[in-house]
Image 1 (cartoon, helix red, strand yellow):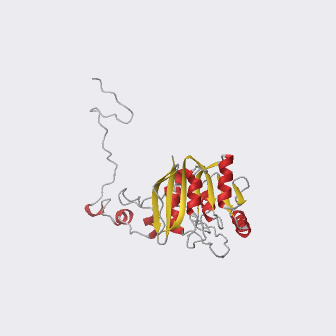
Image 2 (cartoon, one colour):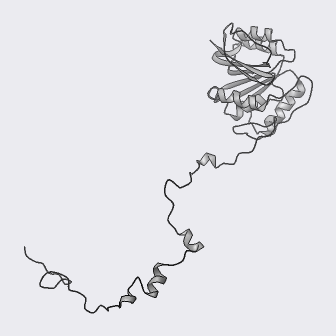
Image 3 (cartoon, helix red, strand yellow):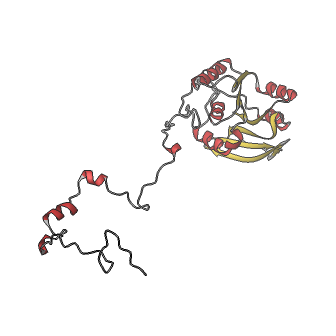
Length: 262
């Protein structure tokens, strides 16, 4: 094969000639052992040089947080705060009166954790609403409509103020001042239904009349859910009319019984 010579390779053997003009160094003055070489290749580590070090191994690198985990969420320490969702941490007003109490924070968190899919983009009915904590919790978690039923005019005014505090727009809520049993019968005649119905402890604790109305399917759409809040020493049958009991949640002196409409 013909040897092709280039301007940089003009030796007869085809190899690049040795650079004879290269200055030879003594044994102790080699590139790595010279004083200049030591200063160049063996510098001491400083704070500025540490910052330029390569990143650690993948196994030792700290885990990065998700974007939603970097959002600072307000701490929930009071029973009058919204526990989760868009209005998390918002303090709500309440009027202290006889037979009026706010549902426990842990009970609310557990209940909405179980019903998250049904509440989101659904219609939520809060009966015996009190100051509206349960209904506002549902709206905070993505409910499309929250309906509040309360017989006290003072509590209805309190609900309106709490909705204004959360800046909930008109059209996403309605407040109805009415007695519970007449309201259920009227909605039954009008055939108006909700996806999730929550009924707090009634003032007169007349659970028999409530179960009779709910058992007839009033206000609960087929496949919908009913949650009854009651003292833990009260129990309900497994089936009531169109309702079938699915779960009971007990916490201290309060219990929640969940029914599904068949």
